[in-house]
Length: 258
Ligand code: MG
Image 1 (cartoon, helix red, strand yellow):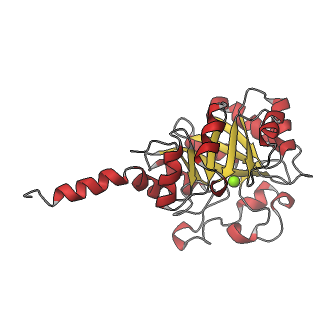
Image 2 (cartoon, protein in one colour):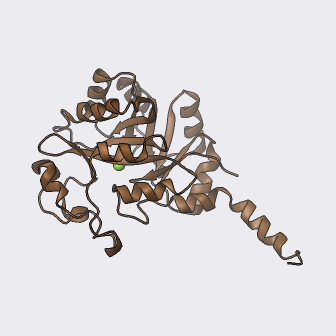
Image 3 (cartoon, rainbow, N blue to C red):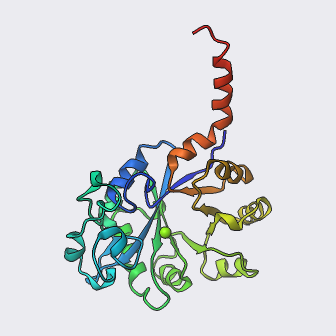
């Protein structure tokens, strides 16, 4: 049986609207989920809110960009209806609301969602919410933007950081070192077993995203027991990790008299 740590990408976003409290509650119902990954941006009045796109159209039904709206304006939007009418009325959560929901139950990979020229203040606002709840040991701050990670390091060197990347550049090791990252968050298509093993052996945690196919989940899980699997479908991981055992039980059942 595979025992890799499972990270629910934007919560259980295969079933519930991504980055909402509903998606977090659903993720908590899957025993295998130890981590959630979420995306955080700042509202125009400086509150960290949980939403992936910079624009509001796809998941919040609004127009324009997130950082041009106050929290009060963002809270009026419906972040659930686009997924299903069952989720109509779900709101864009603040980071604080989300942390309160999962505290003590899940660890949180907080992606600092920023552009290279607009990250200032995001790490500080995120770290404040984390510190308020004493969750420093339960989070990792991740980003595609090295400057956002450097800002995080300057403010709270003891809070873990992770670099997100969708390539495998030759100077990867150096890039991780430069921002003091102990986690590499990498597109699953870019890794092989040798790379995963050597990176983990160097003391860097590796998380692969975003894996929704059972066969690929098993391939990746078999590369190294410490490889973290990030998925929209933690229910499929639940199945993938014990697939051989499930098959075996199915065979035995044929020989049983009941
Ligand atoms: Mg993300």
